[in-house]
Length: 210
Ligand SMILES: Nc1ncnc2c1ncn2[C@@H]1O[C@H](COP(=O)(O)OP(=O)(O)OP(=O)(O)O)[C@@H](O)[C@H]1O
Image 1 (tube, rainbow, N blue to C red):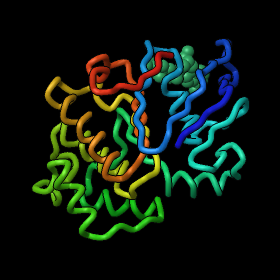
Image 2: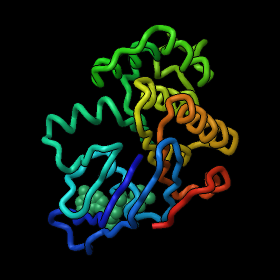
Image 3: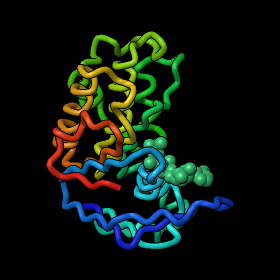
């Protein structure tokens, strides 16, 4: 469950006005698409939900945890355990293999899954045959699927994806959206996708425009 109340954000040393966000109430297991033009604050909202930006005004509650009340250490631990982040630009170590990147991700989140979970996930994402390949040997679409794997390996309570389809052609866009929905279902997670990519809209009943 995700609930936000009266969220606002102002970047320090910026002359822009406060970014003001609509309240969100997303019951467990439900998905939300956040749409909006460039610069309206989509990424800022995602960073506030993930606790990557300090919440100065308003409240973000994930499950029964008010993340703005956590210390920095508690927040890092909470994020590692409960939040899965998938960015437009993927963060992995390209000189390591797919499976090595997954193992490193688990180490950082301090949540160890078993070999079965890793192999099952790679199978769902169509990456089983690529498991021992170095990341730089993967195609763009395969790399995006790996970033999904890194975001969901620890079965997070919420999956936050920032522009996961923007760089992809129509076929890979469809694949990535349905994989995100499928993984959210398997993990019983909330899924929040933030995008300006209108191709994603028909896949979601629940959306807000910033
Ligand atoms: N680090 C920063 N310092 C100052 N202003 C920032 C910073 N990051 C973003 N902004 C400003 O905040 C506003 C919202 O930015 P944000 O990246 O959240 O928008 P967005 O909707 O995700 O845009 P895009 O779709 O282009 O990625 C913009 O006006 C942007 O210029």
